[in-house]
Length: 305
Image (cartoon, rainbow, N blue to C red; front, side, top):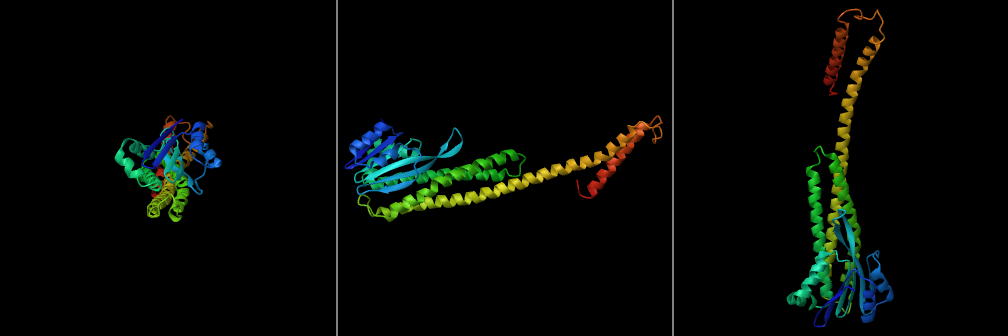
């Protein structure tokens, strides 16, 4: 069982990391939660939602976390039980802002009084505020990656650029999938009044909602930028392919008459020009060089090279 708790006056914060059935049994014993909510605690595929009861709220939210092993952004679920005098957080332990805040409240009396001394609603705001800052930190890293791609767009490493664009696009899609549903959850906390959440907190939750909305707007901008960069990379790649194909075509066209000449002289007919002379080979080679040079000069004047 991985239940840890911090208490300040009449307020308790229970933090559960990687819940197991024993943790659910603990919650069932000490709190009167709905059985369906307790089942959702063990599920890792729940959609973001907010279930309201007379004496508590059950909130499911997702936050982005970067997977260093696979180098991609994933979502991390956090379940909240909030009521009069208690807040319960259940998560997988990958969200550093949440872990750091709990550790600060556990070890520091000043932090404990600051975050727990104003009730469950204010503690929930502190957690969400830290997660919003975490979102913007990830967006800043994504912005750095986009700027790197912009600077390297016209280099010779198009394979690396295309790969970078694909990875950034994947992160943007993952962040969009995580951020958008949270806006409705926080907006619900802002609009509705609950007996166990102070009325003055609507301004604070409004600030959180604005944070998620700004993150969504930034992601929309990033999506447009990365699509533009993708189109630019396609254009650059197409241009370079066309440039290579033009050179290869010119080479093929030049080789065509030379192949014809060598094929004719390969028939070993006695009446072929210069076939019976000592310097016939050199005469034919010189003629072929003259033909090739004339074609190159013609192609250059026409702008093909």
